[in-house]
Amino acid sequence: MKKVQLLFGLFFLVTMVMYSQEFKFEEETIDYGKIEFGSEGMRTFEFTNVGNAPLIINQVKSSCGCAVPKKPEAPIMPGEKGEITVAYDTKRQGVFSKAIIVYSNANTERKSLKIKGVVVK
Image (tube, rainbow, N blue to C red):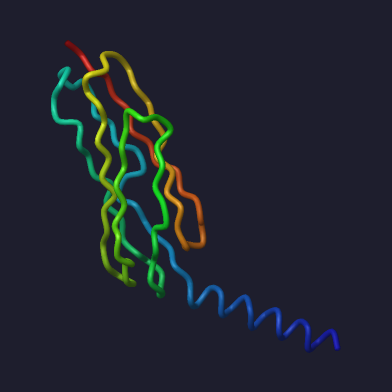
């Protein structure tokens, strides 16, 4: 009986690994550096689905209303690239560091990204 349970567990684990979704981000932190007050605040996180099943991004949230993320609407197929854009409100002077949380069907269901920089007059 234990051998059957062990074989079933091993089969389940192998299946989960073989048919999994996972993304690899080119950058997990975007550093705006010093940017001018009121300048363009749009940046893009690029990623690739390195798994072998469609990747679905359910939701993307920001730690602040001053950074508005946008997720891809369609599933990202294995081997394909996708983008998450973030628009930061550059009419807020000073240093900033914000988290962007990505919720998906990937093995790592919750992925944290970061934007940072300084808005100067």
